[in-house]
Length: 188
Image (cartoon, helix red, strand yellow):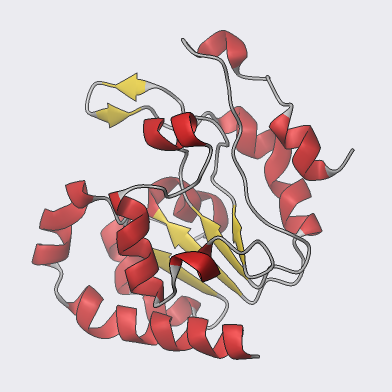
């Protein structure tokens, strides 16, 4: 069995969920860009396809890639902080269980060792990967200091419309730089 098969068979969090776990991950040893999100949504849980929603459309737009490119595991590894839908919380989905990252994250990062850029989406990915993490806004404002190997992003969810409106610099400055970096990587 491969690491991805082991992850697909994982049921470590089953006792904590009200549903049957269905781990979702994408990637290959040759992937060039790693997308680190928080956890699959209910839509992803049902379809088995990561970022298969409005968040995914926005993210692909930010990256400047087609759906075909995005779902090519030789180009993009999509590795959430937790591989299963965590369930509904009071104000959105629950936080990704820490057990998942503790169990799998370092193994996945060691396996996907041709990564040129890590796209860190939201607080859970940023807190895990960046020692200097305070909050999403502060971290994303410092996006240039993490380039060219990492870039922190807010979550591309439609729920973050107000964040984007309050922070126009993000789409004016960070997104063009992100698109160029992704394009350069994919053309190399």
